[in-house]
Image (cartoon, rainbow, N blue to C red):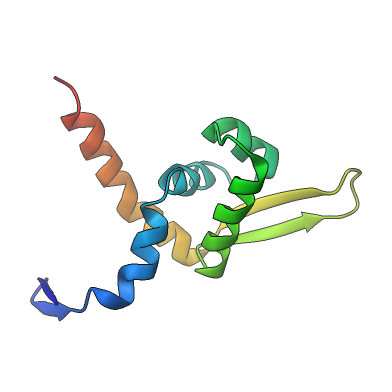
Length: 110
């Protein structure tokens, strides 16, 4: 239990999401998806530098299960294309993450 804004908050229920947010590339994916309305899988791969498509698929699925992103399959194109976008919940999280990223940028300079 920790104190936050005059309330007592239990840390344990948040452990699942904190574990996923702490994984490599997760914050970058959320930040990237907020820059555009929809982002194709290949663009996420290219812009994050993710090493392997199967690892990116796993990470995206984790974020989808948490309700932070939505997946849209475009089957009328060949090959089939997949786009991802932030949900309302994901946009809220991104708005909380961006100040942290700005703080890191500001404080990592010597």
